[in-house]
Length: 369
Ligand code: CMC
Image 1 (spheres, rainbow, N blue to C red):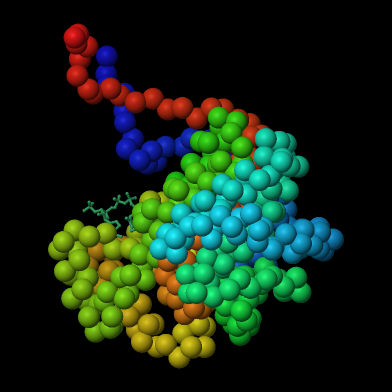
Image 2 (image 1 turned 90 degrees about the vertical axis):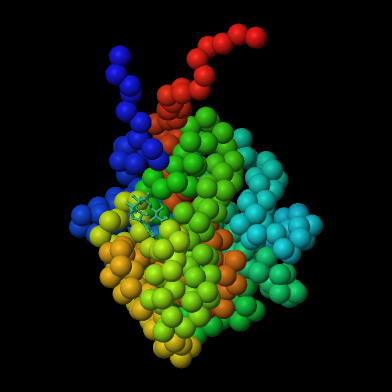
């Protein structure tokens, strides 16, 4: 009989339905629950987008107030979680710290085994509120700084920056951060979201699914690319060296971080919005040198390979200008994508089937001792 077809990387394979987001690479569009992501980034807070992803509709003012109240009341870093973070070396990769902290949060939660939608929604809000505390504190302790308690008079984005830097930066900086959170929130069946759905499909708990998703996101072919982009910028150093650096890297068959995408082959729909936010930061901090390097490398990559930037290309330098350590970039992606992951976990449970594909055996034929 004919050999079954193998689709390496599941490329082009449709594995399930989803009502959460729609990616259309031909029209360069990304919709969250039907709304173009550019419109959401222009008009909505990250809290509103989280509500939309979880519930399918934007919140009424009352529903938004309720979510904001719940999020603001759960922002303080749990002393148990802080103790575990403090037990880890400051040399630990921040993604490993986040992964560990999320595991501890799950182990501490008496409702972990309750997979009802109501309980999973409550856990999702709690994680939305807790992850900034973990990420902010971890960056501070690496710098030898003390924990900054949350402020419940600030929105999600302003509070996140306050807990990281001990002050609220200029409004354009808070806004660029909000835009990045909205853009990273959801992207259909990417590797980490699919990981969360695989784990959920065994009827494991939400925290286990999220911890696995963090592991999948860490890799440089996925979320780790925003960190890797900044290493590329550091390596190149100056705009005038962009072309020669690229030619050498391509000759060595290196993948250029921040470029290319499994789904978008003519450009990532999120890039123009994030690039506009990066431009406001470049103006705010007077860093035309960084913008020049950005433009020169993008132009050279288009010229040599005709491969377009993905979201990580503008977000990496944007987070750098905001003052985040390069190692903190991928945990920021976690802080945002927790909304998409948890929406997918709840959707998977609504019509679950165990995810268990087949493989084609090509080891030795049967043999005997
Ligand atoms: N640098 C150099 N060459 C590339 C790149 C790149 N960034 N991306 C694709 N190519 C080449 C690839 O080598 C292949 O060339 P050839 O046909 O000569 O072998 C051709 O373009 C087609 O690429 P592909 O292998 O079919 O692409 P893929 O769908 O398997 O890979 C990708 C997608 C994202 C893994 C890849 O583009 C890549 O490694 N990019 C760099 C890492 C990165 O920026 N990741 C972030 C992805 S978006 C954010 C997220 O979802 O986390």
